[in-house]
Image 1 (cartoon, one colour):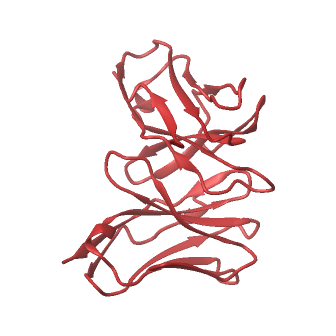
Image 2 (image 1 turned 90 degrees about the vertical axis):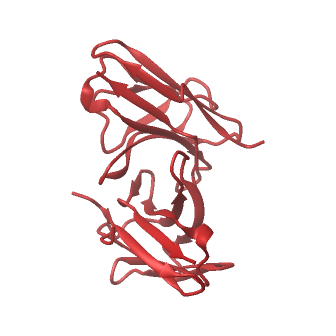
Length: 114
Length: 109
């Protein structure tokens, strides 16, 4: 089954404790991306990657890191989480030619930073 | 500044009637436009898309219209069904994706 998986689905942590949210896709997609969803703000892109070893900042990259060492995986790293990073996070993947096409989303990770 | 805007946070429509969801964008360089549907506690699911070189794309009950001169995108759902009740996001892309803030559609049986 074609899918994007994220782990963990729920996470409660404390300020400053480093965490990683994993994302994996089995569709051989070139493009992968992380978003956060906040009330009234819709989905905002954090980082995206057009292929292995290629990553770019989205609209809200501050406080986040990513890496793309393999095509299927795109982990999101919060080195020192703060309460304003409490949000619902989605990973997504898509084909990429000259543009990124329709993205397939994971089920989401709800993060709470206290 | 938001590059993709959905100015109607909510919309209610009777079952069987047409639902029209609207979206405006600011960047004329966007190549591709998409609509997503989202249920609570799930990731968004792709609905329909349109290339910037077209002005209409149809898929069953769903039609997307693109007016490049007005920088306006709309999604028509005909006929509307109760299962269509969800939050709808429009998005625009080149390399980076930009999403609107969403419109919550309620289809009343």
